[in-house]
Length: 500
Figure 1 (cartoon, rainbow, N blue to C red):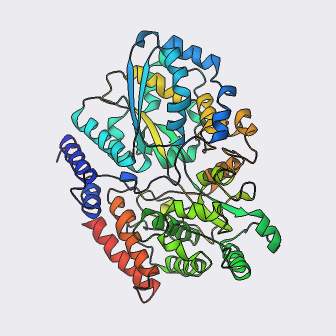
Figure 2: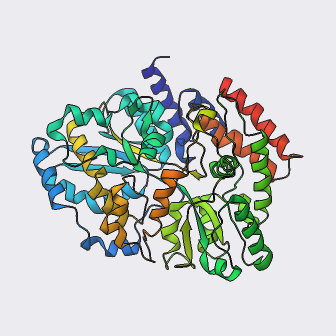
Figure 3: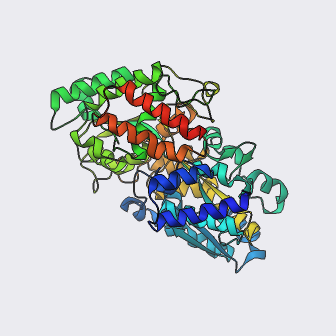
């Protein structure tokens, strides 16, 4: 099957899934064989809705794009006045802030019109696959989930090549080296190409109730063992009104797999070894399951029915004291209109792993780390009828000035550029309240030191969204006699999927 035929077939499969004509398992299996990655169809979806916070809306008038940047936009865009650019994107802080707050500044300066469709991830994927299969160029820019990079890296421009090939359109001080190197490697780099630039970065950090920790005489845990010991002590002392830990452990859901990876990587394990065999059932994998099984008993009873939303609400509503999960939750915890714990939650890096495998000891580019990450890239389509105009917009949308505004207006999302973490506008928002940025130093440190990334292989969609979380869910439901039995079952199924 040639590349175009594969993509046409993939687009048809996506469409059938969206219309409900085929089931999830059939879709995952077929799409995986065609090269679709793990984040497909929102199964690796975002932890929170991406609406702007009230405080950010109030700050809108006080935060304006740089006049120098807008002048460059105006000068570079003169040949493209009247052009319409199109982007289909998931609901993320960058896309939402640009679409609702910042786009008018670009349009006024450039004379161009930008149409941004904010859609569920499955529809973004559907439109992208149809566009590349037909080469129509309906969309000028592509939002690419990290797990799609291998499937679409030939359908977008490498931004390094655009900078060299179009020096007259290069934004001064765009500084492509300012993007955090770990994000370049983990999100937008495939083989020797960049699939756009890093655009969005949800990542696991630790968040804890400082008032409860002070009451118990605890400091943030340095190790995973200490994390468990403290969670157990809180549950023993304060349960059932307060539990020591929480999770996103719904059977069969990708969120369950996300939690599993943090404990697995944190105990020196990996999903695959260098021989590309499933190793989640080895000695380190069993140690992780033993730890997780004990930690589970410190969590609220409903945790096995929760995805990330239920997990986040357990903190926001004052039911649980700690969690290791998506840093994007943190600004909502500080929002007094959405949370009962405004000002009471503190961010820290996740506890140190017991041991940690190297990338060379894993397979398929897996990167072990307790800070499980998810992210996306923004890229210019190879099929765009207006690639130069799209490149101007892409530089503006991902430059340091725009990203600082996105971070401040968009609810404290984690920037993908190093300089933005130190931007005075971002630092000024590091206070208790909606849209806070006071957690971002922890996010940056986690990206640089603790980040974990899942394997990059076509079958990962089926494994991470079906095989692994389904069997893990069965284990926590008591359907296996032991963790080893469950993990051995996953190993058999996983190796069959990879080699099938």
